[in-house]
Image (tube, rainbow, N blue to C red; front, side):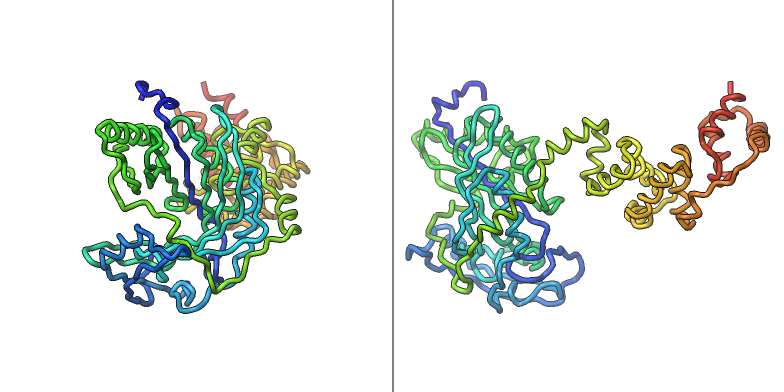
Length: 481
């Protein structure tokens, strides 16, 4: 939107990012496990709007109540009475709290040492109780961007909602597996000056989140963007996960709001959902402060100085810093991506302590097992289970002690995956070089005109991997023209 001067337009923008943490549930001991099998039971409920701490009923809750829907909840043996709202919440999950505080520290926030768990009225059916538990744990932080500092107003720790599986007129069906999974909510100040800066902020916060123990995959992170112009009402845009339409969606919302403002039709405070074409559609009225009231089943949350200090001592490095470190060691971008995708950074570091050869360690840990799994037609998960960390350390130690050569490593891995004992797999028979060359010549004469790579495959098959690859290449090179 080059025709707009964002400063003169009074453009204001802030982000709200929700990220699931990789722990058990926030207020019970149930696993954070999404189920695909048939549910063990169902319950049915209707939810009603109640007054918040101010004594008023939130307008968003009134709107949802007016729909008069029936809600069906599907549960499993991995859900408990807390999710059903038939048992009080347990003490807050300490691991989730620690991760949330790590995020707070990485975003330069001040921890709130004594805080109150609150109930946030939500009666769209996504909770069985009609409210979501949330607690403020830190505030007044910031991050730096190319266009200046953007404040981090608040960081909350809260429970995720139930997962909708079916929606029809007058009824909605939810699974209880997701209800209660810990979420961190990060709320920025409305300091964002342009759509481009909004994207930069989202990516920087994403960098922080990827550096701690969070859940991965579709649905584990949700990004919302608040937008307003000319000091008028703000609009919250939901579902801004797709970074390919991120900037365009904000630009379209600015254009929509400006047009309404020019026509003397002030923008309503509402929640809108982003569509694949980067336009938005109305979802519901924007909630207000009237929907919050204290959680009466839990005491005040007290975060001790010792707990905070422990968090600060164990702060992880940012993923972007780790990537720079790995690049400096000579790893290419493909290997770096695989390290993070396969969650093998710690294994890489441990193997590197045995032998300081980053490229080779990367191949042993990431490339060779993937190639062998594909060739043997087994899953990478099965390959990784066989080639566990202890076995890989043994192989690298064998290489360091020169019991095997670098060219033999892949063959060692293949032999182990095929069922050979790992101690026997590193033993290669010492054969007479003349006998080896004679056998190779015989193989090549029997299959004339093949490529060096094809001959290598035949030779390794014939020798069952028990041959030095470098020697085999040298011999093949003598006779291939």
